[in-house]
Amino acid sequence: MKLQFKNIAKNFGGLKVIEDFSRDIEEGQLVALVGPSGCGKSTLLHIAAGLEKPSAGQILAAGKPVEGPHPERMLMFQENALYPWLTIAQNVAMALELQKVDRKQAREQAFAWLEKVKLKGFEDYYPHQVSGGMRQRAALARAFISNPKALLLDEPFGALDALTRMTLQDALRELIRETRPTVLLVTHDVDEALFLADRILVFSNRPATVLREFNLAHYEKTHDLSDFADVRRQILGLLGIHAEHGDMTMTEGAGI
Ligand SMILES: Nc1ncnc2c1ncn2[C@@H]1O[C@H](COP(=O)(O)OP(=O)(O)OP(=O)(O)O)[C@@H](O)[C@H]1O
Image (cartoon, rainbow, N blue to C red; front, top):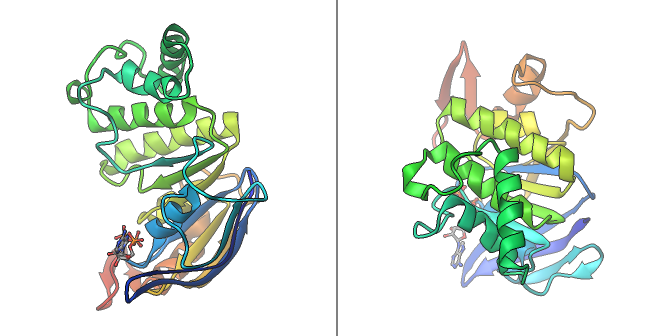
């Protein structure tokens, strides 16, 4: 599903959060949004999800104006996305049950998706009985089970340790390769953006405008991002972070 942001602006009362944002996100593309904290990245996702209306401009999904939330455009958050009183399988199946899929069929599909994200054997556990990484695997299964045409990921692995995050990034990439949704990914992790994205948009402080766009679509990527050292340095520089000799120092006012 192609997403088109056309001259989007957003104010919350007197607070100008987004100013004249226009971009087309092509079908099947993964575009990462990085920028300072509070600049308006999540707000852009909420606009794409239909949870917020732009103050000006228009958002189109597959050529049609977005008028509200729809399961075709699935939002996934950082953590605590699972209902603690439901088992892992019930949490995943619920996405289908909400769309009136028969209970038994929903459960079968939930088991199949949980196997894909390597949670076979944990279907009947409750979220508090598994690790944070496993909960996010379940959240991925729940996001993908209804076969969304657009995935809107807001710091999906932000609460996980670096190693777990990498295994989740691998899992996400596999699922994306299999199902080919269009993806908007908000992340504070520049390496995550480099690893997963076809395009990276670097935003300014609020009101958010695009400082620069990087196109990485032609690269076959691994977690060894040494080929991207230069792009990485440029992105960190735009964010006001200087990475030298392995150290990172932030200039005042930066903060991602
Ligand atoms: N529903 C809302 N009502 C009022 N203000 C809001 C609302 N949603 C967001 N804001 C404000 O808009 C600004 C941008 O918020 P947003 O969450 O989009 O930033 P962000 O770039 O995603 O930040 P972070 O990286 O820290 O998550 C913030 O100042 C926030 O307080």
